[in-house]
Amino acid sequence: MRKLLITATLLLCIFACRRTENAEPAKGKAEAERLAAILESPDRARWQMPDRVVSELRLKNGEVVADIGAGTGYFARRIAEKVAPDGLSVGFDINPDLVAFMERDAAARGLSANYKVRLIASHNPQLEENYYDLIFFCNTYQHLENRVAYFKRLASSLKSGGRIVVIDFVKLDKTDEESGEIPENLVDKETVKREFKAAGFKLRRELKFLPAQFFLEFVRRLGD
Image (cartoon, rainbow, N blue to C red; front, side, top):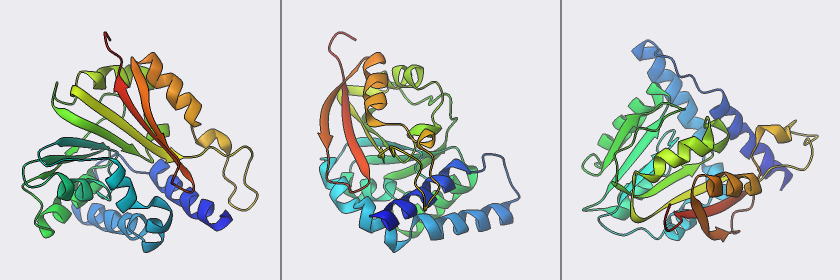
């Protein structure tokens, strides 16, 4: 379990250090490939359990999903396959190098028809209104700015009955001696719940199958 958390922490650090500025195309592509070697590592599947996660999302053909902080499209492409042939998965990221990587990857996998990518700002999602059945966050929460206001804006982007799923690392009770992970770098799940409640959402499901992460699903409160 200790090694599991160290690996997860390394991933977290990668996301925390993501570049947001434009880079020279050749250098940007090389940087994206470097990150992909880590984010797409087979070791990730052991603790991220992507097939189980996607199964628990309960997606249907024709649904439209936003993956915010999609990185290399680790989940966005899996979601695209699940909502095919009539649905759409949109991978959003703040890093233009990773957005370009996802675009190339979607084309290479023959998923371009229902897997789109977009650059996004960390402080303002600016998603289409009444458009998404699901908005998905994985390993992204601590990087969002002004989160309550952020989620209030996202509410209008959900269709009636739409939901938001948050998956992120369980906050450590104290600094991990081997990895050096500091608790303040993570957001505990009770804080996540409070922030969504303040934004007008209620918790619908909490799943506990992931070994180092929580899985929370929210829907809008009636009347909000």
